[in-house]
Length: 255
Length: 185
Image (cartoon, rainbow over all chains, first blue to last red; front, side):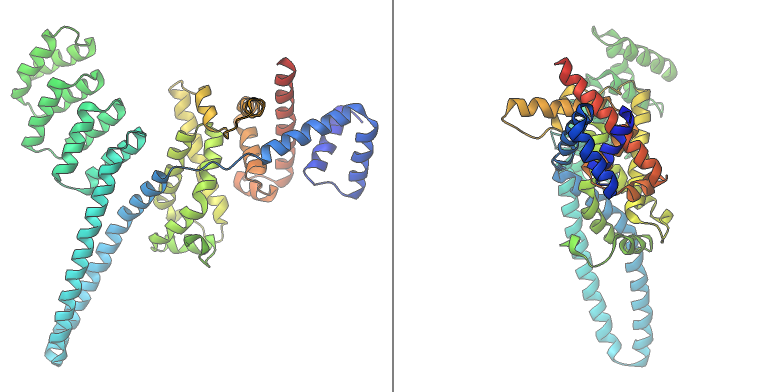
């Protein structure tokens, strides 16, 4: 029996895939053959090591983020269901008003139910907002902050706490990808106030990648107010070449 | 508590497919630790493993309509995890960052006071790193996760005989690398 054949048989034995005659063959081989004994001991040790490896535990944020995504998936479904139910209740109530006096009671009941649903929805929105803000503040994980920013942009049209957090990430986050994600999210709002704050951010911004992205964004709609900031960037000592080039071409486009 | 649901994985996934999306939370609770371990050990990095696990379950929601009712859920979700890892691996190759830093390997090691034990664990992980992706994957599934060959064959869409041969080769290769390192040291 050559070495490879011995190995196959020993592996089979240790993986408990041998029949009775093969088992006896391996046991005899290990007793009589030095090479087989070494293979057996080494493989046995390795397999034990592999099987004794502890289970790794993910952080709690993995679960939180998934449940948040799940809640987002659920929203449209619930909205549709609740719309259908409302329509159903209204039709039923209209029919019953004509038919019996019970309709009034039913209608009042529906209103109470709707108010309750609205209060529950408000509560859920507050909880989701708190979770998003905590994700955006998570100093341990850039990916969490990015997910927080992207989900927050979907979550709210103009929530001041969320906007403030996004600007803090845009101006101060140590990770360029997080800054860019914050910029992308803020760009979706497209209001005068946000654009003014983005211009201030360009003046403060130290990250060249974000500076270039800001220049592109702020010059998209022929915004003349950006010109002094661009000129200042070109003049400023220490401005990266790529940023200076982007500022130059933006100025050309604006003139 | 959700883990104790009476429903099978397959029943739950069919319910998710048919609109009971909240049932996905039960499947997440049943599988996320296993998928996280699988991906962390393939990527040799816990942080990457966590991001990829998140992607797997987001894909599960996105592609719920592709689940076939007769299919085994475990195979379906692991195949999704394989695809997520393959995408990650391709993008890592493109960005030239495929080398796993030694510090991230250390995250996968259990905590020990015994220096000899630490050194041996370290050697095992370094040896695993030297296997090719497929060999590492086979050992993660069959040895770390203790799946049956039939289950692995189902996930990898091949025959049991083929899996047996490949597992044998992977163990052979790992033994060579591991004890070669020991001899060198």
